[in-house]
Structures are given as C-alpha cells and as structure tokens.
Length: 340
Ligand code: 5MM
Picture 1 (cartoon, protein in one colour):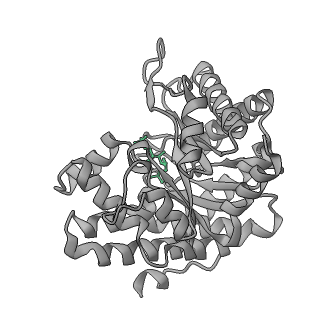
Picture 2: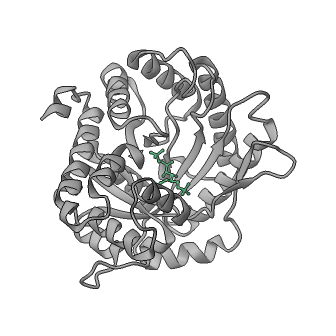
C-alpha cells in the first residue's frame, strides 16, 4: 500500500473547496430516472447522458472527482475517448462505484445489506488500470419501527470496512458511504441517533480492518428529519444537529466528509451545506464537502430530456449547481445565486 499516495488523493478530492459528482447510478436507477422524464432507457441514451456530463465546460472549477458506474467507465465519447480519460483530461479524478447493490438482508424484513466483496480485489485492479483513483461503496440504513437492527448496522459496517481495506491495498481511496435513509416519519432527533450509531459502527470496523483514516473520505447523510415527518427543522437547526453528530463520531484523522444529498432538493442541499460551513468551518478537523448525485444532476436531467438540442442548457445547469456547492463549502452560497 502506498500510504502517501492515498493521503494525497484523499486530500486532493476535498481541496480547493470542490466536491464530488456522483454519476454512478446503476442501470436500474438510471433507467428509473430516465423513465420519469420519458427518456428511452438504452445503453446509448445512458452513454449520451454521461457524455453530456463529462464534456461540460468548466465543471472542473467546482468538481474534483466524478464517480462512475461499471457500464460508464467502459463507455466512450462519440470521438472514441474513454470517459475516464476524458475526465482526466478535464482535470477531474475518475472514481468508480464498486458495490453490486443493496439486497434484502436475510432474516431482516425491511433491511438491506450491500453486496460486492467477492472478486473485489481483481475488479479494483482492473478499475485502477482504467484510470480510477478512488472508489465508492454505499450501505443503506432504513429507519422505522425497531429499525435499524443492530445486526444490519454491524453487517453493513463490516462490509464497508472490508471494501475500504481492499481499496487501499489497491491504491484507491475508499469513499465510505453509510446512508441513513430519509424515507419515513422519523424526527431529526432520531436521525441524529441512528446516524451516530451507524457512524460509530463504521469507525469501529474501519479500525478493526486497519483502514488508514487519512486515506479515505466519509460520505454520510446529513442528519435530517424523515421526509414525511411533520416537523421539518430550519436549515440552521439541521446544520447544527449534523455537525454535532459528526463531531461525536468521526475521527479527526479523516480528511473529508462529503455529504450525499439523499433526495433533498438541490437548493436545500446547498443551503444546509452552506449553513454548516458558515457556522463551523473554522473549528472542524475535516473538510465539509459534497458528493451529490441528484442535487447536482436532477435539474440538468430535467432540462436535457434526451434531446441533443438541450445539451448546452443541461450543461449550464450542471455547472451552476456545482458552483452553488463550491460556494456552500465557502459559506458564500446565497438565494441570489439561484436567481441569476
Ligand atoms: C447515484 O446514486 C448512487 C446509488 O446508485 P444505485 O442505487 O443505483 O446503486 C448513490 O450511491 C449516490 O452516489 C449517493 O446516494 C448520493 O446520491 P444522492 O442522490 O443521494 O446525492
């Protein structure tokens, strides 16, 4: 393991107030998003959409790394340039989603365990040769009556740590994503509790598997009330709760926390990240960054609608969202940015 290389890459991913663009939707997820907008769900439309993203002018001013999916890392621009190479040429670090999906956990109704460890060592070698310098694995934690179970928290944390250790062995920085879902009526307080439990389990397992904390990125959810909870706290309250939870659970050796957006609107995700950075940035040991998929891509996808004529408008929207999130990292995001 080249420790210094891992540390350098992890730092680079959160340097310059930039963040990550998650464009690693699996085919079923990508197809679902296309279907909602009437976009044909074919390999070619997925390729064309990803070409739109990787060729967006100016994206690298706010985006440090982009997470690809297995199909996407094997695809090329129309001119034959592989997407990973196109990203490198644009000064964006290519990353790769390496889990094979969250599956129903045996004996645990309503809970999932993420799969993908079998053969991972060989897949990581291949992705590294294709240009990937970091990887991502997502565990999902549902909140509900009696959920999450201790066993689901432990099993998912264990898998995340096994994945992270294999990544570091292969020279790839692991992005460790334990996502406490927003689906449900749970309160902000409960979200803080479950997020804290999930993170505590994750760091116990990461230490157990000898993962170098300086050479990883944590990709957690923000602590937020469930989507159908009647009480929706203010942006500042959610920011305070999230940072308090992270301070209690995330070791200072971790260089960066890059939030997922989890189904929040693009504007709220930026506003909440902004509030955290305004209120706490100068006292925190780690960078508070972003690794959004929907909160960067969704407005662009809605503009594109699968039409060549809409590519430029969609690209402008992507750059806009990326810039809003760069500003949020600086605590400089304002409503006015959404009106320009
Ligand atoms: C892009 O979505 C990723 C999950 O894809 P699959 O469910 O198809 O495997 C997901 O891991 C994503 O990277 C993160 O959840 C962040 O996305 P959001 O939309 O929550 O910012």
